[in-house]
Length: 318
Image 1 (cartoon, helix red, strand yellow):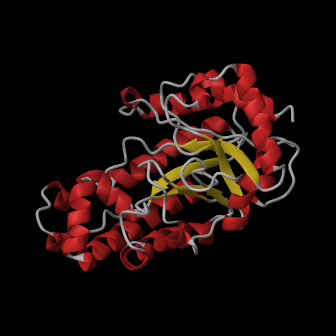
Image 2: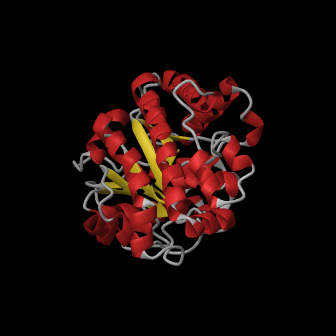
């Protein structure tokens, strides 16, 4: 199998010759201003780590560029949020930059583009404290704002897949920490806009992955995502479900993960021999069907790329 064949088979839950590996890091801010440098940074990381496929970063485009959010004082103001539209630089910029990266891959591997859920797009602009205050002050206003963002994200997803040539999206689902919302609140306030984007992505690609993000350090209330479906779930082994087989059974699809991504943990400190042994142990647990080896979330920029390569090379020997 080549890289594309291997990863497509893994997404379909088929047996592979060896377990695919993919871990990712964010692109340093010094490369954000120049799309060519940004693309080269991503392509260089792919070559240096030799992972089986790429998760393309959305760095520079994380916050939502609406003037309404610049001076948001009361929740009712969220009703004034207007669509960006297909030609807005926030959308076109991501599509054009992704084109460069996909072209540089020359069809060698699968590429997924990071897309945040609508509420996270808003939160990345105004911050968690204001987001929580606004959503509790007027849930309907927040739901309206998220629905507007969701329609713009559909335009982004369409352009990323159908125009830029990415295989699918890496849909980062957040805000599900067990202490943030009740089950009922999440399903009423957050799920509708989450699903608008996810369902649309699934309608135009069968190569999407959902990332159940646990970067806040608090376990997720996984039940709120029980009907979020994609061929692959990227989950937090060190926050939510430790056992790989349990994760496969719980999510009912191929699962992606294994290593702790947090600085100072095993991947950052262990010897090459120890990392090779842990890689073998994880693959033994996950098997060669329905498992992709990765990490809980983004790898910190301080990690040397060769350590990711050690994992990729070890996996190919098993």
